[in-house]
Image (tube, rainbow, N blue to C red; front, side, top):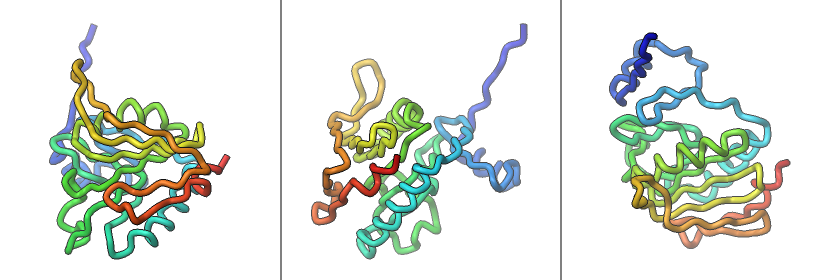
Length: 192
């Protein structure tokens, strides 16, 4: 019986593969804990929610923060996920020198329908372990927003968030770090 050895990649190795054209340009990939993961195809409600939310966030955060849609973030030493939306601190070079790193990130938002289990079981602990203070999961399956704050390590060595709250379609929520900016959830949760 042959032993299977899994090759895990560093950020540098992953970037080198991209530079060499190892992946097809239309492939949607992420580096998660050293594994190159093929991203799930987007269903229509996911795409519509992403477009509507990005349009709203660009307007709300103009001049206050950088809003990035489905672009990479850097989590050393071996992760470069592509969250659906990231709100990051403004930078003079608009992140030309590097994708946002944990210290730049104010909020990560994932939109989940078919990826709900992956986002909860893989992405949430990854973001918590990295020290990303605020993570929102727009759960299109249950038509709710799940907010996660204050990352911590459990006694078993797992990572999660201390504060977890659920918001429904009729709710209005304020953004972390921007108490003067709020979002009405109905347009983004009532897509089924």
